[in-house]
Amino acid sequence: MATTSQQREDGPIRSTLVAVGLAAFGILASQFTVLPALLLDPTVITSPLDASIASRTLLLTLNFVGFVLAGAIYLAVTERGRSYVDLRLPTKRGWLYIIAGVLGSFVFYVLVSLVVQLLSLPSAENTVTSYIGDDQTMILVMIGIVFFFNAPAEEFLFRNIVQKRLYDAFSRGQAVVIASAIFALIHVVSYAVSQSLLATVVPVVVVFGGSLIFGYLYAKTDNLFVPIAAHAAFNAIQFGILYIALEYDLETAEPTTSLLVDLAATVPL
Image 1 (cartoon, rainbow, N blue to C red):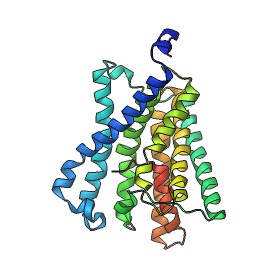
Image 2: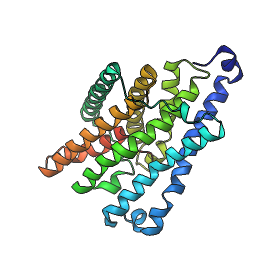
Image 3: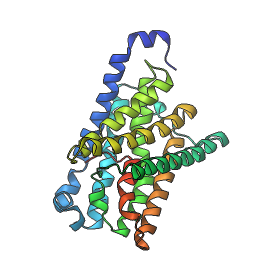
């Protein structure tokens, strides 16, 4: 917890600007870390579905490596070091939070899906859908990416770095909301090409809601493993559902893809 003197020295405005800067730095770093994949196979950007699974996997993996790199650089420059990283095996209470987080995410997902369907709301697709298409093998690969790269990298940067940095000037509840808002807003770029403002707003709101859940888990446990596990488990199950939908040619496969990727909260390349 930050002391009162620290809070006065690092006010809300400065703390928020630093948090925004860290998020932007993470995106910028990811643009550099994906360069090897682009050089090895340029079609992974120009025509993703024509690229090999290996090329797509490398690109998506290196994208998340950029988040880890950004966070690591911040810790080194500020001399916070490895001790700043709240990663450890969870207690029994921590495992209960993980289960609750997965269940809470499903409830949120179902509610959002119902609202979208009942109101016939448009929802723009995230860039990552262009790397998956209806390729079932790539869906299985995404499950591995979620567990080993996506969830760990995003939770490390946006929870252990951005959200924790906001603790210096805000209450934990406020920090969760602000960090989630930053996380959602950086996704606007990947939806800005949609045909309507509403189609852009819907997925951004979905990202915000999912981020609130994972941010809350971290705030309550001070253990990065908890939101990582909940995030990875939830998205892995969702990708599994998408795989089954495509396998059996279910009608829900197409509309599920957009919200699925939104809840996976993949930052645009």
